Image (cartoon, rainbow, N blue to C red; front, top):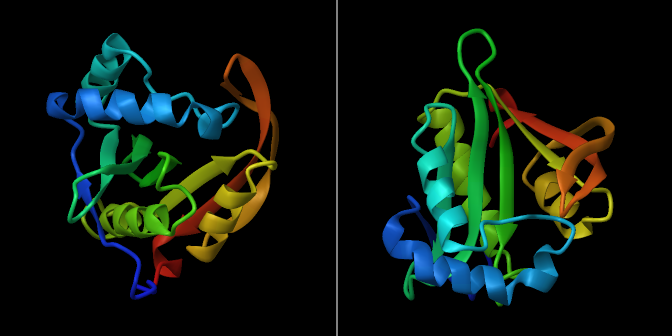
Length: 175
């Protein structure tokens, strides 16, 4: 893993009820960062619905946390997992303030991608990113994803249909 020596190490945790309060605090702290790009669960009911959704076979969720302090760095979701001849899924992710832009989500995503290819035996992961989200575009490019296309009005985020670029990586491309 290419990590600066002074960068803290992250770990992955399965989202649980015990994370509700710190998760909701992190969401509140990160409203400006997420505005227009992500719509994380922002209430107790929404968080519990999120946990319930992770019980489905076609979803995985991970909290990226600081290994030493246990602080929430961000979230990575593996959505719409399709098995059989496809072996594919969509990645969704977002960081929390004050940890955004420090290389920590890169570590977390690298770990999740490794699990998806190694443990889940997936063949392809796709990330759909708004063209204005330069940090996220740089992140997936640095992880080896390739841009595959452009989808106008692809996802409804923050009440608006938003254009997205489609980026993907296959298991044989993963290093």
